Image 1 (cartoon, rainbow, N blue to C red):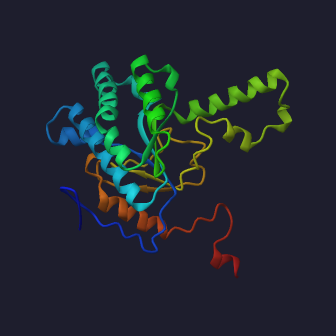
Image 2 (cartoon, rainbow, N blue to C red):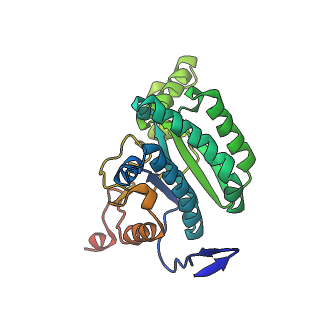
Image 3 (spheres, rainbow, N blue to C red):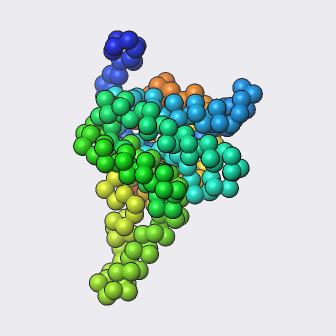
Length: 255
């Protein structure tokens, strides 16, 4: 273990370990984590927010350049009003409290989702967070908030439809790349790996377009307990995957 200030820091020796440039994480299991401990669900969400800080630290040490986390989906509005209110307050508190630490780590913050449909206070946090972190060079933390993969694709199609209506695009010229170029954050690379804690084995409307060729890794560990060891194991397993993108593996192509 290496010592940094008053904290013990893990030594991140990646060696020849292949680490994804772009990583997606579905932060799932906060409520179950709290229920198991006879705590209110809000305590689970708070523990999950604390763990996001640790995930950023770990990914930064490993050299991940883009980390997209699923924080609040378009479907989460169906949860009880009190829980949604707590999530909104926690969102504001997280960035007020932890931005200095994110700055120290060189982490730029960006947001993806239907941000304009959020309350003004939340939109202001998004604007401020993006502006004050825009020059941080080490890693980008992309927070998917009020995000839905289907809504993102619809948004892209509407933008293209406006171009068709204006006569600047011919429908016959619409391509996959054009749709990709009109997504919320077209400059962010598609995730090579998506991690889902909590044991659930579904994508839950997360990065539907971008995950076309992502590798998936599922852990039974609930999100607030998902730490360095689990992340390291995910990267080790990812390094063993043969990403063929519909083609043949190197061994198969030699036959």
